[in-house]
Amino acid sequence: MTRIGLNYPINAKCASIATVEMKSAFEETGKTKEVIDTKYDYMEEKRDSIKYVKSDIRFIEVMETICQRLMHYNLHKERTGSNRFAKGMAETLQTLHNLVHKGVKVVMDIPYELWNETSAEVADLKKQCDVMVEKYEDVIEDWYRKHQDEDLTTYLCEKHVLKGKTKVRG
Image 1 (cartoon, one colour):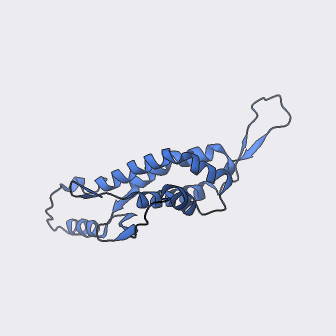
Image 2 (cartoon, one colour):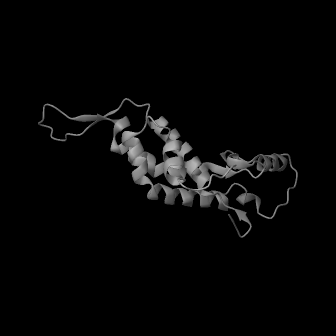
Image 3 (cartoon, rainbow, N blue to C red):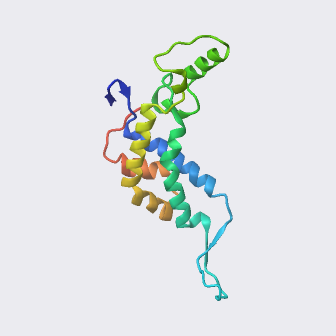
């Protein structure tokens, strides 16, 4: 979909990138051995506790950070397909930065100070992610509670977000 000359990501790319970040966030937070006490009565001898990796707290913390993590992505116009959005600086922009640091005067339509700002495409990707996470929060929570043995991308993207939609290559 193109609006005003900008290439906006399609839902399949948004869902795919968001699930990559969710998997990464769950993996990062799943390494702890922390236990959460659920009884607050200091007089109680026996305390109930749950493992952090199975807790609602972990789920909420991950869900609150997923879409913000997409702001670390950049549009790599020199790439095609799903690799167009990736973390790190685009090769073209990296080359231009290197030229500037070597003293070469590079003239572009945007000021140097704005070269590293979030692109419209990435900002739209984050907005789509916010909408998707809100719309499919119950599905994601169901996966978290009952289906973690199943691949999140398959469970969320193929079985829910993109169910019944034509597959898009790239």
